[in-house]
Image 1 (cartoon, rainbow, N blue to C red):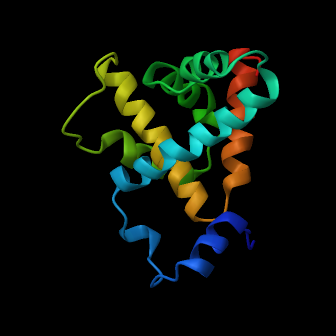
Image 2: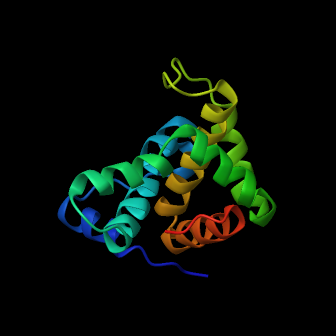
Length: 146
């Protein structure tokens, strides 16, 4: 099934690059990108659902964009992942990092890195909608209203 990623296509139209085989990217590079993908989903939802000043948006976003919350999300959706998605998550989770966020448990940090790698992978493969769907599934399971 051919997926569409208009955002990525626009980037490549204006900034042509030699095509990269996604399988050659490290899990940490996928996580680096996936962190932004997850944050854009949460920020988009936050501006649509949170009233008041920007500090309210930041507070709401910070509640969901941290290692602990991301670890909860991936644990809630693991059974909903395809075999391929689970492989990407595991590679991201098991990637050797040189640092850990100062307020994160190591297990949460690794699981969050796996989730971010998965979201980076989904974005680059044209499956941004799947990343949003997984957020919806996880938020429903965790009873998170956003």
